[in-house]
Structures are given as C-alpha cells and as structure tokens.
Image (spheres, rainbow, N blue to C red):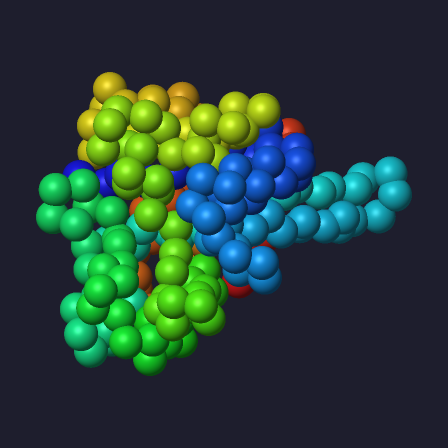
Length: 194
C-alpha cells in the first residue's frame, strides 16, 4: 500500500490554500509548515517563459531515512496505511529525523519539544475523508490515494497523465519518494530541484 499525494502541476495556481488548510486543520504554530509551495521560475527568455508551482510536503518514502535514524522509534511507517508518522509520546526532540530527511519537510514544535510533519491527515483519512489540503485545493491539483490500487483517484490520475508527464523529487538517499508530480511539457519543463 502506497498512500500518497499526486500533485497536478498543470493545475496548481500557487494560491497557497493547501498551506492554510494544513495549518488550520492540524493546529500548526507560527513559523512552522508541514507543506510549502515553491515557485519554480520564471525561466527562459522572452517570449518563451516557463513557470510552475511545486508543492512540497512529506514524500511518504518507501525507505524513509527519518525512520532509519530515529533512536526511539517515534518515526515509523504505519503497517496498515503505509503512511510515515511520528508518535509524539516517543519523540525526544533530537531532530535527527529532520537532518536525515532529504526534502526538509519536518519541523520542530518548540512548545511541545517534538518534531512534526505531514500525516496526510491520517485522522481524516481513517474516516474515509480526504486530507485537508486535498479537500481545500480550489483547482483540484491535489489528489490522494493508494498508488498500488488501480481504482484509486491517485493511481487513475497517474495512469491518465502518462509516464512522460509523471515526476518525483530527486532521491539522493534512495528513500523512494511515493508522491508523484504531474507536469506536462505544455505547461513547463520539469526542473530537478531540492
């Protein structure tokens, strides 16, 4: 099971509603983000200019480096959903996982003295709801589902886009990021970032 996000960059407008929805739903403090949107570009020369927005959050890696380095087992992959989570009751705030994550998507909660990250709104998805960022995406650019289930919305979106238009963030540590980014050449050329 590979529950993750598929992000259609052909549709993303960079409105940041996913960031606001995430912060509101999860009570994330000022200065911390479990999701961010990076402007890629503009690149090129006039009149051939390209630009797109790249949402970045936990990539739900198949071989998560954060889990490998956690000394207490607080960072783990849920055996039922495949989602990478943090058990705050076991977290000692050492931040090793933050250093190990190749995507910089974990944050330290100064108040609770624990590390936090995107949970794909596991409290919502356990009840059959979409993650808050997906539910509140005004352009329909965010899709949640199990990539291993051909009937899921996520797997259908990837299949419809075609392999040439599907991308993943660079994987310097062989983490196996699950999140898929759809970007067609009609919108822009994929840039190897992060």
